Structure formats: C-alpha cells, structure tokens
Length: 318
Image (cartoon, rainbow, N blue to C red; front, side, top):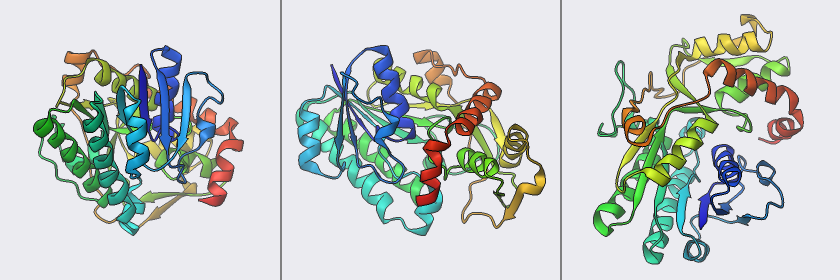
C-alpha cells in the first residue's frame, strides 16, 4: 500500500510519517512545498519506504500523478499560523482551500480513498463553557480558521455529492519536538533559553486544550484505518490551561521568573476558549491520549534545550 501524505515535512505531518514508517504498514510518498515551516530534515533520510517530492498541492498535474499511484491520502498541508493569516489571508485561501480542492479532484478522478482531511478545533470559534461535539455549527473567526472550515466543507461535499471516502479530524493545540518556533510553546521555550522575554497576549486568560503530537498522529491513523466515510472525529488532549497557566509552567521548566514576561496587546478577534468533546473517537475508534501533559511538556522542553542546531537557524531567518 502507498500513502500520499501532504505537508509531510512539517511539524505534525513529519511526526505522522515517522509513525507510519515505524509501524511498517505502508510505503509513504510525502508531498511538501517546503515553505518556512517545513524541512526535509524532519524526515528520516534515505528510508527505503519513503519517497519525498518537493511540490505544491495546488499543482494539479503533479497532484494528479502522485494521487494516481496512491491508495490513500492523508492531508496535513496547510498554512496554519493565525497571526500570519491576520496580516495577509491570500496564502491561506490558496493553500488551504484551493489546495484541498485540487487534492479532492485528483482523489475522485483516480478512485483514491480514504482521504483524511486533517483540520482544527478553531473552525468552531469560541465557547465559554462545555465542549463541542462533531455536529456543532462552524463559526470561524480568523482567516486561518475560515480557510480550514471552508476546506472541511468542500471535503464533505465530495463525500455527499460524489461518494468519495472522506474522513475529517479536528484536533486541539499540538505541542512537541520540531514545531516551528512561532507557535506558543516553542516560541516561549526558545526565547527563554536565549534569555529573552516572552509575549503574553492580553490578560492571558485564553483557554486551550493541549495534545502531544504523537497522540494526535495515533488518532489520525485510527481515523484512517477504522473511521467511517463522511464522518468527523475530534482528537483532544484532555489538558485545558489558560495561556497564563501554560506560561507559568514554561517559566518553571526553563528556570525563569515572571519578569521575563512581556504583556502585549491582545490578538485581533482572539477566541477565548476552545474545547472538544472526543467521546466519538474514544467509543468508535478506541482513541485515547497516552502522553500525560507534565511528562510530554518536560520532554519537549528538553528537546529544544538539546537541539539548538535545529531551531536557531529558523529563528534567525523567520
């Protein structure tokens, strides 16, 4: 079996590829445009069951050729940073919406499936209490979230209109090694390791659920292998923290005090709280996170402490 994994040189995509190769379940073709957040160094060099292709998911000819040789598609490729989407949304619409549609067209043409669309909890907007189930209406607030919601709806339309085996995952905030140092955890850790201050938005009361990237990848593979066509599955971590609480944990892990925190103006349209109900994935697929947050965070901080060779060049050129 051959799996086409888009965005497989990025943070989550490369973790998923390493998961597949370790499980020895398939040959893997990675398609990645190698934008600022992707690197071939995230993948095992020279692996006999891995083929890397540098290319754009909006390139219909290339996507068609790769999809013709693939049995299944797992689609991670996306522009994903909210702040960048606020500064300019064109790349997000092109990659996340048009790119997904290009892949779906190719999968439909070649009869490729399942097609797993990897999405985000941000498509729901904000909720002050409770947790979203998969039938919650989509109310995205940022250009990034709106582009992902659009991609999800297009993907589901290909199932309902054409019968394409589409399965969607929506996850909470990921953390772990090899995450580009613009997201909260790696940005704060690397700044603190360099003796710099860290920026805390607003009052720091925004709440997120945290999921280790390895648990996320196991969940994606459960959806690929056991999920039902046309269904959405939530993959949560079970650790809700305010940004201020998480900042305190990172300060402690890096041996720093609150004097290293710079309080900055809040992000435009900053959603207050995300929370997923992942009962469906647990009961149908047996999904359950394995990494407890305290251990996972400690391991992540240790990885960045030991791998300056990986992140220092990225911070110089971002």
